[in-house]
Length: 246
Image (tube, rainbow, N blue to C red; front, side, top):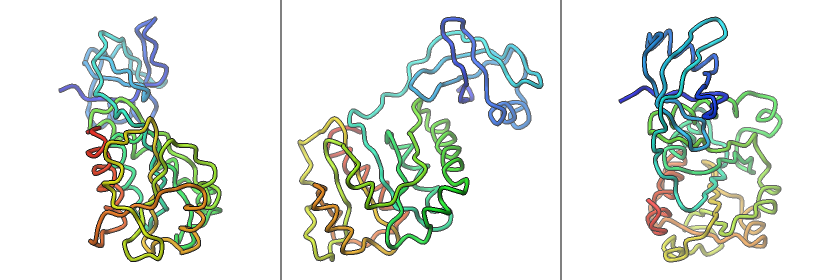
């Protein structure tokens, strides 16, 4: 199985592509590949090629495209995960797993109970780190499409801005607003959907009220209490199963 790399400037017309400095470093210093070796390159938008290393120098790594490789099929439903920012490296786990499951976009959101504030999120380098994790996950699971990862949005702005055909808010079964069992979506495969998932401390009651007024459907996964960094991947898998989209 060929090692995979994200390619910049992938140009089928000229049969050329180049690797970023980070990808080039991994190719030359970690895998110790060299001129003439074959690799697979993908552009993050669904195209993937078998390629041969043509040039390695200070400018990076340049490859010659040999033939297109059939990329793994993407989910039919274009699913966005709006995930409340979690503590520590838990958010990195969510990004890795959601990329593996084929989400189209990941929007980090700041809620009443998140410990990370918008200023720290926008001024820091968290989004860049999450994008690198998404690249690594896509390479590992042989996905040729990268999810779009946002820089962060306050929850009260996100719930009124989102325009997905189906908008789902995952709530705990104990909250005051009644949540529908997730199975309610079975047989309703939309063209686009957004799933929003709360932080470790759950949603504030007013956040659920705002979302419901904005047209979001509250859903639950049942009676079990799930870890904040595990619930998103479970919910995505259940939804894709119900949509016959696995």
